[in-house]
Image 1 (cartoon, rainbow, N blue to C red):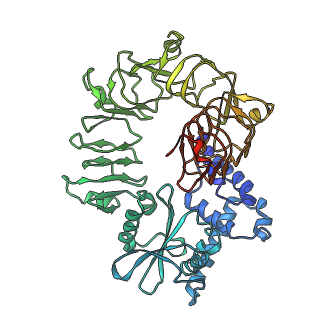
Image 2 (cartoon, helix red, strand yellow):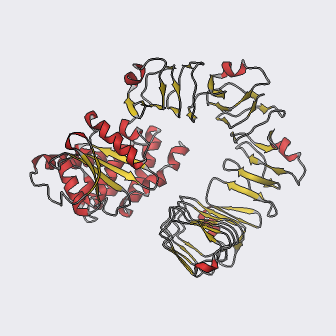
Amino acid sequence: MEDLKNKIPEIVSQFTPATQPWITKRLNQEVDRTGQLPAEDTIRNIRDCLASLDEKSETIQKISKISFTGMNTIQENWHKKLAKKAEKLKEFGGKPFEYEPILKCDNGFQWVRLNTPEAKDYEGNAMGHCVGSGGYDDNETIIYSLRDKDNIPHITVECNNKSKCFMQIQGKGNTRPNEKYYDDIIELYKITGATNYDKLTRGRSYAILNGKVLIGDNAILSCPKDTVFDSVKLGEDSIIRDWNYSVSGDFNSDIHLRSINPDCTFGGKITMDNTYAILDGKIIYGDEAILSCPKDTVFNSVKLGKYSRIKDWNYSVSGDFNSDICLRSINSDCTFGGKVNSDNTFAVLNGKVLFGDDAILSCPKDTVFDSATIGFNSKIKDWNYNVKGTLDAKLSDLERINPECEIGFLKLSDTYAILDGKILYGDNAILACPKDTVFDSVNLERDSKITEWNYSVKNKFVSVNSKLEYVNPDCALGGDVYILFSKIKEWHCDVGGDFYSIGSDLEKIVNCKIEGKIHCNNNVEIINEEKHTMRL
């Protein structure tokens, strides 16, 4: 349930400021009441309805008294009115021919891009949805429309061009797209580079075969057994329980399969909640199949699912090892060539796993671990070792890190700053420090409410996807700086390391010296560029 509530701030950020307190309260109530978040479509439809309302409207004025169910009824009626309006309107208004042609399709259809508010007004009126209500006029996402030979729209698609994914695909009145338009929608996927076909299938299974999309279990199972799919996604409503096809690319399953044919081969990434191991391109499926392998077997990769009964691990793995369960032990003779992920406490040293607090703390203080994870049951409070890669302590009660330790990347569960080795968790603890404080390192998470930064930092400063808008030019930042996907528009601070701002709102880097490399969007203007080492 805590994981669900951690998703709420991101959802809330998509609502207008006036409605954010209401949606925060109602989503928490829904999670407490039902144990799950409301459907994504329901949340989005409520968001769009509220975004179209004036702050002086009766609904907004009385919003604190409206339940989530009541608001859902309001948005349903609102969307019905939009759809009814579309049926009655002969003159749709807006500017129907103000668009950018993108792709010609069969039967006189074409995909067009809508760039102006007037073009979106026509789309919204004609389709009976909210694209023309003003909520999409900022062009933060791209709106595509499938038009017939008479310029009548049939499908509307919202696309995030930064992440190359479709946000929504809607028919008239926000209904599921008619399947007769699926081929045209697939062509739009291709030219935009988007691959999240689940937005089209809406929970149903699909497979890609020679560039074509097969939607639904029946379409997949009707293929001959020697079919090799390009990629597969089994949706949460799939009734497929036994898998008998090879897949040249990625295989993703939201369901708990009963079996996977050992003769099947897989060429891409495999994502499942089940327990499995990959050996020479084949899936060894389930606890018994894995444990039947000789002890000198070296798996390519391993995933122990949450229902696995394996408690002691005794195999080497050349690639990644992921465990959703709390293991009792890992054989110290086993070697691991990729990432090791587990809720247990462990450290990786020269490819071998040291399992548990005692094994780690028995190492000399000058030990340099490849990576380390401090689990929720660990009693380690103080950390005194160097770590080349990641020190993951997000589930732990870690209180202090030796300031002399060098750590490649630190993961904690909250916004934090490190001061003389002590970890300060959360905005309040950080902002309680005097303005002349110089932190060792800082990480502002998405849920941080800090919008202005006024402290110097000796080492790494991270503010990715946060609400930070301003950094005081007088601050000294001695290490690498990460402001990816932030709202900062201008940068005036000297940086002692590399500077990363890809995906942010940054427009200018002004009169400051950056010792390392600059990684920014192409539109960023760098003033006094001769002071900088390199721009990438």
